[in-house]
Length: 391
Length: 136
Ligand SMILES: [Zn+2]
Image (spheres, rainbow over the protein chains, first blue to last red):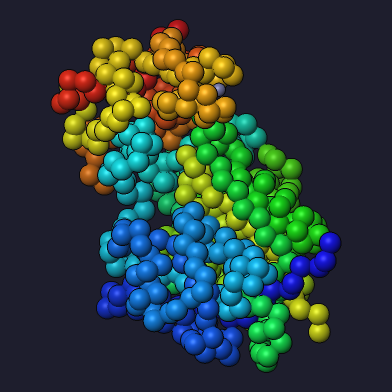
């Protein structure tokens, strides 16, 4: 089999805002697109592929048309896969496939949203009944935090995981966020701070939950030919995998996620394993989201996540598995309640030596993993393995 | 007692019998006569083998708590229903289903034995299954 064409992330841009009451969501899409183009050294006219997920504020289901119209794009390829927060990790993989198929050469991925300005609160319950599943879930007050709370409760029951072990995930993220001038919460917190914060949905505390922020981000994924004409340091897409986890007709296992499948698919394509990963961006809607993904991606055995994260494992620069060095969704940014975009962006920063200096890791291989939807009902998992270019 | 003002299930052609059965005091599950799968929520084609040879079956109504979480606040939720125990109950008939356990949160643990009961809604052909701990 011939070697697959190399595909690169050439541009990455995270909007510095965390609260944007005076901007429209589409304006944020445009601003992050312009930011990524400037980062890569490309022009808007170079874009021939466009990737975005739903635009939650508009709910029209026509997001590719709305957004191409607004942004003035004429793509030969478009993809609006919507897995919730993991979508943007999927878009990187889908863009790589489209580029290898010759469908496009410069793929733009954008995300933006303003849940903070629109007044969404942690634990707020969605009450609308739309899908058949809503009648079996939302009528019972199934909030996102409640469903992740059930996952944490079951993980604790089966594996002896403790609130303190979950809290270490937040503490490590806050250790990193103190160096990020744009982070929503820069104050380092301790394990005690987390377990003493108010319980939102047993056993999850307020500080087990991600921030609610306005903002967005964009990526440019490009072909080998385009990459060869750029001066910018790029990051190679080495492997990608995705999977969907769901009720399984009533056999749902709240302790496992589809990261088992997405991760092994990504590692197989990359010809690498978890032991090769120097830095990991791991989706952190809640601390339990991180813990289960760490196990499912193979960084430790199922059930050992609690003891794995103890002792500074996740803390950059010296931990065994430095994670979310921007502070992640737990402390820095969770634009549009969708954290997959910022996961890829921080992994790109690490491989370009552009992370904040105190948390810069000596990394040749980075992983970004997204968990979209809810592990309490149905979720998308997407994993991308990225590599530093050979000098 | 009525379920409202909480959100109310919206029956569709595949699920109306489930909700109507609940209104007459029966919890139904679906059983595939080809592959044997007993499943929830109701679908006309078996989600394992796509057979249309599926029947309704009355569940025993008993089960145990697979997992749970306690909500202290949900925007728009009636105060009288808080704290709310959100749970997955594993039915003795097999499937795990999302529900509420109508009990003092102190009395709910993983493994707690529960039995179904039904809360009426303003619609005469829709009731909502919830569970209560069994005295042992
Ligand atoms: Zn079947």
